Image 1 (spheres, rainbow, N blue to C red):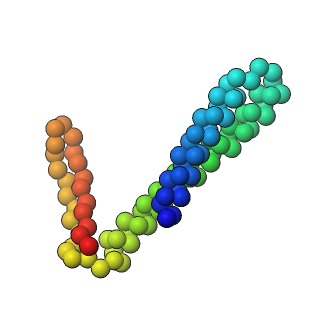
Image 2: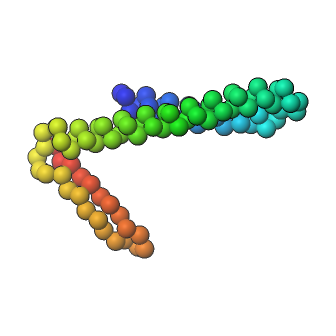
Image 3: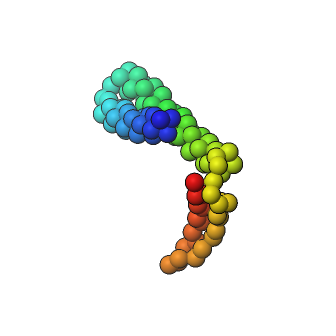
Length: 94
């Protein structure tokens, strides 16, 4: 539930920042541009706060799965080379 909320908030913040940026770019007079810039700046910052929240929820859930949840086998962590790039894989069986 937290992950879905953080993901939804991140997407919403990205869309809102994009909308506010377009409104700022469309402003023709300096007073309107200044006000719209402040709105855009707040929305721009908010998208990062939501992304940080999403990253924290993701990290917390992975740490919980790796260290606190009962599991059938130890977690597997590996590095592999595939088609010109390195891949890092990590799996946990429950």
